Length: 323
Ligand SMILES: NC(=O)c1cnc(N)c2cc(Br)sc12
Image (cartoon, rainbow, N blue to C red; front, side, top):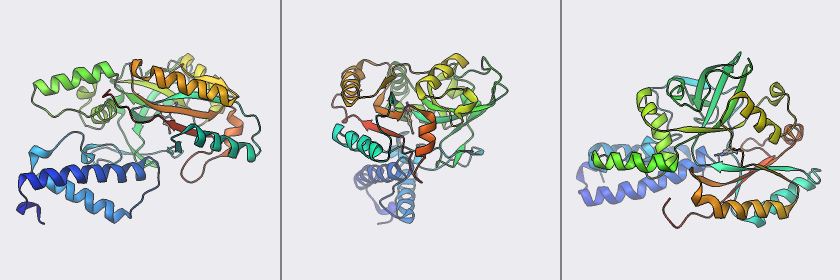
């Protein structure tokens, strides 16, 4: 039915169901690089949602997929081509599947690997480029190959060093996130101002970075955890755990809740520990990341067209209590 002929009830219902559908398809496409529908189906649904929100402004929300990262690289931003594609990551939802992943690695000759376990931060992936130790450019993941240049906004984030402790020319990647406390305060303010609220800290971080006014970013309390260097030789390290320490030395904010393990028992202990601690952390996490610790071995294992073979995300079951 043309949007003009819809009642507000019909439009509300359709916006709700369409948003969920577009979000799901967007996640499949942008996070798992594994879409379940053809692009034109996604685009049609996306455009229908855009026209519904235009016809019924009261149904617009900052959480709508039409406002989210990955749903569409907003043309207002300059484009940045990532020298190394920013891949997403395979994920598993049970310890049994994690064991399967590890067994598969062992069958591929990776016997008794050491893993580095890290927290999976619920934020927005960013890439930071440094030349001779100076921060020169920052971008979003975008579609993995082409991201959006958000350098001006990222320069407003205190935890991103403008100058490194060594004059390195290097790209680093991590997550930009909004602490839970800042998220609660922001939504409180928005309610007082009669604005719609963000559904979760991840959307709030994305909404604070993917907009054109750096002052808006400055006013939103955002932070970062840096956890990846595509070219680890520049760091002069041989393991992921050493890379994290080196990144901290350079001046980056690094989440040091990582743990080097080499047994299934330790992996399960780490998962249990952070399943319990999750609610008490000042930032949102949606799982843990298990990485082969040896960087040369990671390189040997490489990636499929979609995801690295040397890391996997174990996702926590969705939280019952609201964050
Ligand atoms: N520690 C990590 O490697 C990590 C943390 N948080 C995340 N959202 C992601 C995403 C990828 Br892809 S890796 C990673």
